[in-house]
Length: 441
Image (cartoon, rainbow, N blue to C red; front, side, top):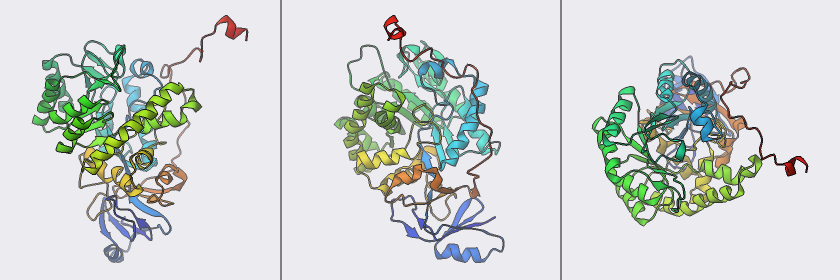
């Protein structure tokens, strides 16, 4: 049934100022705006009308860094050793509905446990389950040095969300295998943590030649490459090697900035995880020292990221949703808030980063992420004015309508309460060491 949204202030996602106008949706696409929308509506007898007076109509959010298959682990131990393939797929199908009901109509899952991201995407596209538009990688490529999980990683082979590929032949083989299975992207964990590390952030664990080999192999088959980069040299080398998108991009220096600007490589800072730990870590017993480290990462990286943005580099919103600090359906708006607070963006600029700019991560640039004639009808209706305060997007009581491909989503489905899964979570014996002094205190 055609849909007419009337009377709302339309934020089109391009950075333009809001304009009160109608939006007419026919089948899965936006068929007209303004007077054209009103005229088209008169040509249909059977039509649904949404009165959005006093509300905001805007594109659905795109979360370009969401780990939908992880199920909110609180540790690497839990993520690597307490997940089962079949259960991971079932739980991800449950969790992805939370993301959609939070107003996220598109997400990019850069890497996944097992290959469940690929299956989940295909199930959504086939109408087997309900979820946002989705692009996905397979297992993240790592060298034997490992990534942020360090000593957990094997010398080669698969564990959790990773595949350790210590030789050039294995790199080529794994890239081709992932593409054969249907991955939309190839992800590389370019930086990681090592014992007794002295560098700020993380250390680069891939050579430039290896990075270029990944890009050449993937690009020959028409698939883009994305990298996890949290130091200056990794950002510079990844941009020079041909990476199509960079996650985090923190601790940039001038050479890294120059490489990114020269190639206009989109950056996904993904500050939400750090911001949540910095601002709310005391409520969950986080180490105050770690809170300050993450706060400094945001502050110390914001200036360079803003310079990149001012030079025309796309900045895209991603939240790292999927961990205990960033549970599904709760924080998908927050990267916009961080962009406003730390990068000095206007709310409309931040909204553009969280909508139109993210379409490329889905492989749908020019198709979604904006309220434009002919675009896919991925639209939300919000009570409030995100053009002056992006935090209203985090209040689910203000989210009145979510439309995905022209179809309204039920925002209050009747689902049973989720119970614990045997062996799924890490059970801690205690929160501290039980010395005799503690016992007798």
